Image 1: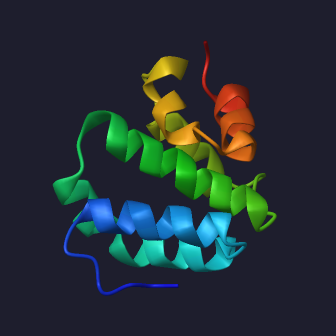
Image 2 (image 1 turned 135 degrees about the vertical axis):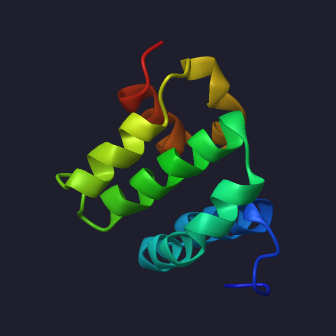
Length: 105
């Protein structure tokens, strides 16, 4: 479900969360790929790193965990601490498990 073309990375972030949680990880990957440059220009620090992890999570859901793109996205979320991402995992145990698996405590 896409609301409207994103004006900035925050809307893209929300759309990606909705797509992944709504069982459309392919749509999330495509949307993030299409709008990545815009997101990079408007998101900062923890939010852009969290979008990278969300992108990697969506890739994993599409069976693309063992790809260079996946590894690059997870590496791009560094340097970070686990606590930097936990805000995005509330009420979403699958994403929390993914974050805990990929980000050092």
